Image (cartoon, rainbow, N blue to C red):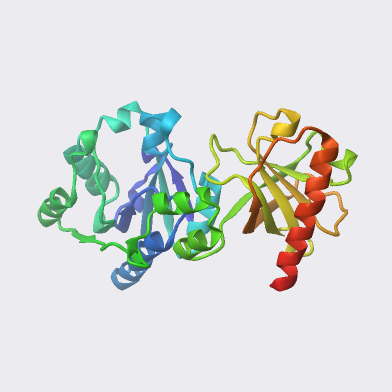
Length: 309
């Protein structure tokens, strides 16, 4: 998959393609239905498939303080799209200039002139352009004049409700990993590089692999039974704490993973953490001894879960 960062990096060879546009946060089942249609149409027409996304997310640009937590950060999204037969990923910088482009200008300058779109697939709630004035009717009218077809994908439902990133965030916030996994079509996961922490876990007998999330807000917090992929042996069983570590007055949101029956140096390794079951909420303890006792209980609870699998 070719990753194109910015409209200014589009070249003449990129013209003529099948396109879909969106944020694709989580790359959930609804997104996968759109991407399946994209791949099928691209193959039928003998053209490359293009997914256009935006960085930062428009909601983060307009109201960063209240923007929803991302299900997937950019790197994770790229990895997922790479596995779904996407030929090109166009990442458009969403800034003041781009947000001010009128809907008609976006269609003419970006879709027609730069991409030479031949077929456009959009989700059921797609709006675009300054003031969100563009909609499917505008696209269809433009397509009739410029010679491209527009397909508006229907809502993708699970259990009678629309699959959406918002619905998945709500499930994760409530600790309902089963529902989140059902909507995602896979287990919820986070990825990152193992970095050196303060090594406080070693002092109480529970060394942890610390993974900085590169997120302003996490959609999920608490203590979990998890599996870890990306090391020599996989999957590895583990207990993870995702949060700010209130017992030691932590500030940043960090993913700490205690690998069970494992003792190797893995600093610098890139790992994936698969969340299986929530054990409890993160909480503040009066002492490190009290924290240590609770971690013993967490580890045993996780072992019980793994034994039942």
